[in-house]
Length: 146
Image (spheres, rainbow, N blue to C red):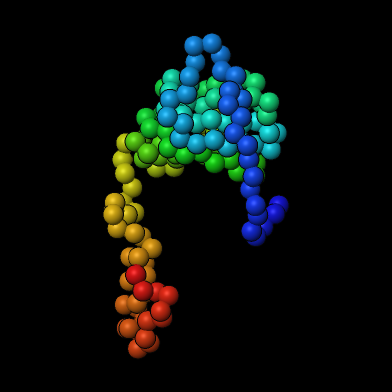
């Protein structure tokens, strides 16, 4: 696995994907590839997860009725798909063929993480670190300013 700075190059190939007749994507939330070069498109349409081979040939689709608001996709080193559903406040882990392995979060209930829209959690943490530094009698470091 490579690390560090890399130059990523790509070429847009219009019409690369070959969807079944009368199918279309609706608001693609994310695209990811597994170790077998299969391409997974996570979208807000009738077929939320659409799978292609590396040449763009349709292989499979799954996830119908399982998501309220597809939001993001990640594939881990074991080829498990992690699919975020922002309207349901959950993240689901799946096998490549669509078998659900686990769910993080409680369906329909936002977690009380302290995150608030418009308030950066990084800035908040920096402020808490500054207060802790003052309490210990140390001046806050410049990079902690929020």
